[in-house]
Length: 302
Length: 306
Image 1 (cartoon, rainbow over the protein chains, first blue to last red):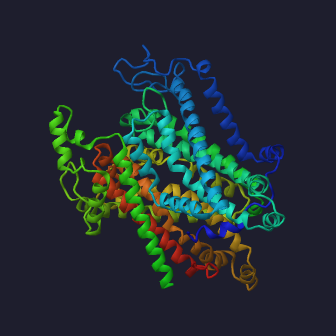
Image 2: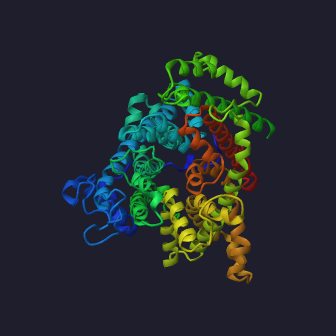
Image 3: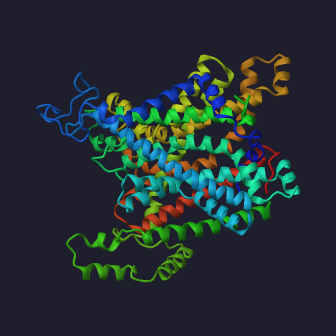
């Protein structure tokens, strides 16, 4: 519908999905991508082994966690990242918060990519009435202010981890659908697909043998970049107090709980803030590198 | 052109109807009861039922929607449940502040993003180029509330250069504009860099150099205008990003725009305000896209309206 998107239609990747091994080797050669990859591995490890890493329970209000006046402690040898307003160890909360960010990042974005891909492929490959209804609906959702929609949904439900993931998925599938649709459309009009039609191949064969393999690259790239968006959206909802609810720690709600105090205890805002930035940055860097590697038409542009 | 415009306006109208319907359905089926919210916790079931009847919330869905939609056609957005004011009036009184903030954000994202992209392209492959591109990635990876609180802490609390929040003077505008604009600045930096590299590769740039112009003259006089125009055409699309951003930015800085209006309405389940702001935002987004599409062929004649 929009002309801004038009030039992309001709730029679909030509090669089928390259082997994972080659992609990984290419990825290793890029410093920034490796930096991002290292952060992702670190956060995943922290999330998995959280109980063995943390010095304190994330929800435990520590006896010695506040000053005599009841103020939180700045970072020191005992509490690496300091303590929060309730005297809980910020490092422990941050490590457990990694679980929240990753679960939502992977689940919400996974759902969004699946919905987006289904809608995009249905509309782009089968077309017909169902296809155009789906795309009109996608256009409609594109005109929705995304965050406003997420906020309305999150605020009116009683948010839990899974509701938040679902809300984010409901907002984020639209972009994916649009991209996959454009690409499926241009693939369906390619000579090699038309040749298959002419040879009498069935719809299923064309879809699974010829169209889907070409979409794998795009889906991988969006699945990676989308996690960055999702992490940011979760943090924003939690910051507004309508995301993951305390005492379950999430990097966004740590900031939400402590923001009124940020002039006297800035570490309570900036340490989780840096964590959010690093994780989103990591997925953006890896996603961007993947796009470079997987999409030959983009090569040499940079 | 006229036919194209007519068709696009028709589509726009359909999208707005669709959005009003979707929002209405969402607010209808969600497990939040505005009547109970208004009546307060200690109210009797009768009081709640009364309020519900007063607001017409006991009517079937289609009746409620029809009433709302016909009101819209007369420019009537309904009345706020809690403030008893016309929603149209509330939005109109808040809109100038939001528009001002968006204007500020556009200026900051263009100035920062285009400068970064241009410098990176000219210094291609250097440490500076790499640093700027990493910075642009950090820009698009930073949630706006973190930027907001960071700028507030450094420039308002520590340095005292700008007020901590509020509205009124130019100094109030600076930090919120930067906060709203930094995300876009990251994207613009990347787009500008690649547009600039494309342009610098063209033959007429070599010709300009060959006829003896200085490097900076070629860059500023020949390359910049050609690289910048297609990017400027994208501003219309930013409206959608801004419409999301204002909720957060306005709440961090206490900026009295429609973002805060929406946020307060959501917390109080004030449905007419939520509907009104959503529709106005959708309108702005659709118009922004339309403008971007209309401007694009003026700048690049290879793009055709279809």
